[in-house]
Length: 80
Image (cartoon, rainbow, N blue to C red; front, side):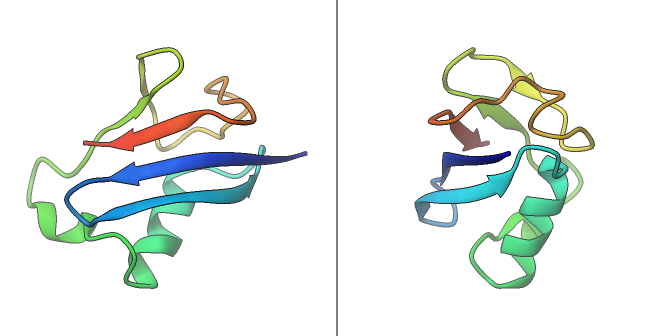
């Protein structure tokens, strides 16, 4: 199942709707966007980054899939 989510990273100036597979790992999406130059997550040093769901307010685990973290169509993910 495909989801359309909004991904926001103020540090990179990234604010876009993207389509992802619900079974894809969240970290894989971040790596793809980082490798493509859209996100500057590798430049954040030891602390790295955290991802928070705008709908639930909870932090999500990038090692898990969108489905496992209960990310639904229309959700907003903020990279902190």
